[in-house]
Image 1 (cartoon, rainbow, N blue to C red):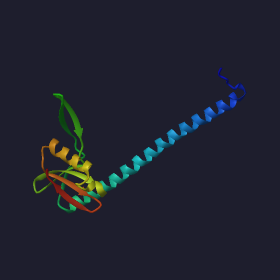
Image 2 (image 1 turned 135 degrees about the vertical axis):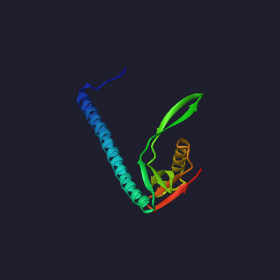
Image 3 (image 1 turned 90 degrees about the vertical axis):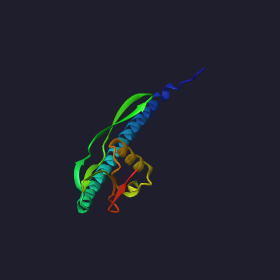
Image 4 (image 1 turned 180 degrees about the vertical axis):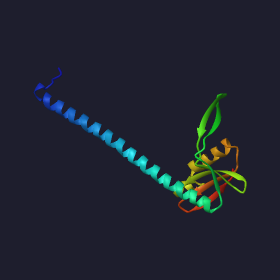
Length: 146
């Protein structure tokens, strides 16, 4: 037979309420933490974008569009599925239009698999082999071709 101690029921309920409150507060703190991290990444990205724009101007590039959108397509089991991409910039120099991506640190390296895949996708969607990778940390503009 199962025995349940009713004398300590109040304590069990109190522990349950305290535990529930702690779980809720932990969930809220995690949400706040994620928002702060997102804000800091966004702030760092805006700073890098400003540096990149200065560098491009200094090197003779003209900005055509900031964060242009383009529609791409992929076929899955013969079904056409569309998606949208948004590179950082479209720029031109000497009557050549480039798709530009702004990165810093290791992300600004063609050895970074995510950066390389991103640039490859841009080349396919924009049907262009004219890409530049802007390294704001090293203050370099790298021409990329696939």
